Structure formats: structure tokens, C-alpha cells
Length: 324
Image (cartoon, rainbow, N blue to C red; front, side, top):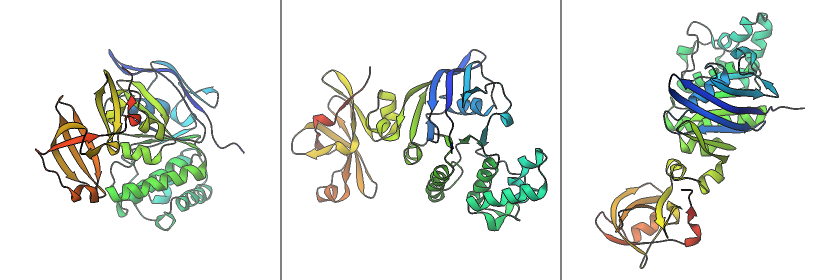
């Protein structure tokens, strides 16, 4: 049985007056994949998601889902469902009635929609809260209800607009694993907008990094992190240094930098204890900042302080050349 559907953006463009928010995007979201759209504020990721959902009009280009151009269909006719950052639950309706609301709007009888709502609430581990009101739930519980409500329409693609941003860090990590579990069980495509690199790395089969209204780089999460194509991607993903080497800009992972007896002379600018390692920032004589992630035990065997002279070393084979 087929459970996934390809979603394709074809020369997709969005303009607001003279401002281009999304410029000529061409991308295929593979069926049944978990895709994270990420980038800084204003890069175009949320506008892209809202166009896919039908909440923003398309200026140029097409959105094709399972071979059908859905660009000008209303949201309810597209085969997509969107989970909003605010959850937007109806405060006067029970959890069960919130989840079944879209079926109510379609004229589905109450026993049928209640049975379906109960099924979805069990899927997100919220079955025992079906008769409560949203105000009686925690933020994480409200999020699960919003997720069940989005899934009750049996969408081909689920769209998530920064769904974890309102949660505390501990719950955010827990919900990441829940989202990944649900996506695997359901076998449908999830497209998740985030500005969090850690969140994208934890969740995504495919990452789409946007900058200035275009896709800067896309591919498997590990590939994007380990082989950034541009200085922007290397810096945005974090964990990398961008330095000049033999006349070219290169990326070097911070955990590949060693403190040694020989190497590139530098001065310690900052030291930050981060548990398993210590983040040491050093300034080279050429004025470039280099971050080294030093294992905790190794650092405290020979501690360094701001102002100390150090030598930075790495294996040249670990340098990754960036596009100009």
C-alpha cells in the first residue's frame, strides 16, 4: 500500500509588493520523508510553508502534490494539514471535540468523528484527556492535541510551523522523538519549519537550508552538516570554523581542532565549559576566530585562560573547501 506522496515545488516564487520573499524554488520532497526547512528569520521558510498549505497565494510557479497542481486549491482541498506554532485550540471545546472539529465541518456524524478523534488521541498518548478543556492541559499536552487535530484529516503531507518553539528545552527534546516516531508510523511526509539547527539535525531525513529567499543547500542532514557548500551554511549550521587556507575559504569542524605544542599561533579569547567538552575560542595572528571543542578531561589536565598563547592544529584532510 502506498503511504507517501511526492510534493514538488516548481519555480515557486512569492512577492510582497517589490519584496521577493521566496525566489524561484525548485525542490522535490520525497514521499514519506521528514524534511526540515531551516534558516534565519526572513529567509523565506515560513512563506514557503504557508504557500504549500494554501494560506499564502503563489506569485509564480507551481506546487504539485502526487502529480496534481494544487497551487490554487483552498487549504481543505489540497491533501495537506498544518499544525500552527500557537496550536490555536478552541478553548470552549473538549479535547475530543477539538480534534474532531474538521470532521464536524464536513458533516460527519458525532459517533463517527468521536471514534476517529479517540483513535488519534490514543496515537499521541492523550486518550485519557479526551474530556478535558485546553486550559486544563500543559503546553506539551496542548501540542499533542493540535497534532491529533491536524492528522485526523489523513493528510498526504503534514506541515509544522515551528511546533516546538513554545516548549521548555526538556519537553522539546522529548517531543522531537515523538514527532519522529509518528512520522515513521504514519509513513507520510512531514515538512517542519525551524530555525534550530539541533532540532533539524535530530529530526530530518532531508534538510533544506534557506537564505535570502533561495535554497542555499539541501540534502541528507549528515551531508549538509559535514559538507557545507557555502560559508553561510557552514556558519549557520554551527560547529564549524570558516578560515582562510592556501588562498581559499575552508570549513573545519570545531571538534577537529587540537591544542598542541606546534601549530598555528593564537591567543585564547574565551573559554566556556559545556559539560562533555570545553569550547575554547582563540584569535589567530591574522585576526581570524577559531573555535576548538576540547574534551573536558584533556582541557583540565592543562587549563587555558583568556590571554594565554596556544597553538592550534588539525589534519589538513579534514578541511572542507567552500564555494566562493
